[in-house]
Image 1 (cartoon, helix red, strand yellow):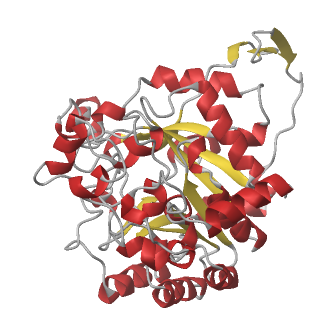
Image 2 (cartoon, one colour; image 1 turned 180 degrees about the horizontal axis):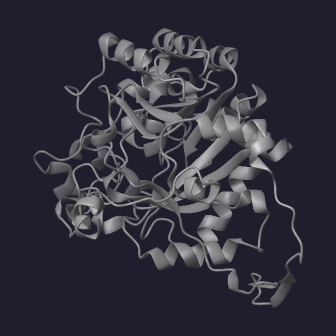
Length: 435
């Protein structure tokens, strides 16, 4: 680490706002020890017009959003609030967590449960959408609340909580379903749980023989990097293979404090990935996304997904055309390292799952040639082999084991011959006259 970065980290970590005349009065007198304490950060979150008026110049739209009855919960850690531009209502940090009047406007196609999670929930808090993995919701609480949250129907609601009985039902289902090899712990944010409870869940999952990988989805390293203590990281490192997906949306989120938190996690051998939501006025720019991806890989975080914004209530003003995402992908492929490029996906409504959307690099094909183009528009032909002795699935132990598995085969099942057709619901009934 360079001396310049090291000094920046020491300054921001050891000297909270309050050391100069520009510091909001809200934080004057706060000691470095308090500012660095994640519990202090959580108990001093900002949520009201009066709170935010002390640190930013609120607009009429922001006041309306903060004052609206029944609005999605607002809580922002002092740390994350300190990153806001106090005079710019278009600040990308500010727009992610401060509601506006636009949040209250319904839009066409919005859904209560846009990803169809409730329909794929065999027990409360568990979503089994894909054959070999499940989403385990363990809390509805977050360090701060994103205005575009896809689970705003339950997240932030103190009455929509999960308890020990729910955890036992989730764990029992996972233990009784041997095809589950991957468990993603999410919520809410799992890193807001008491550490003993989080460790108990990790230990119980690690004791299930067919669970090969545990993942944690979190924004705590962004909203509350002070929570990534050496004690927490030492506990997490006891449950490898443990992966962590962190939600980054803008390069301004990657501060010296965040770099320290990411370094602790990476040094503990926890593979880090990032998920980014594409949002109008925040990161819908190829250069912003490029800068974010470069900052991530510099901090040993692998870009994972770039999400098209979900059809969730309150997020209509954040939505972009899908074409914007394709434009961004064109700006990345060939212009930066392959491992710095996320997969652009639409999380299909009604539980369709993540569908990758890519620019078309395959232009045409014949029996002998494949015509492709590169990121520069260079077009060339790739010659296919005239003779090909394909893999023999009958003699392959891996194929035989896969063939014996039940569950969703999909298009891969058609290609392998495991299934003969994939038909929409009601197809047989509608075409019964053909029999």
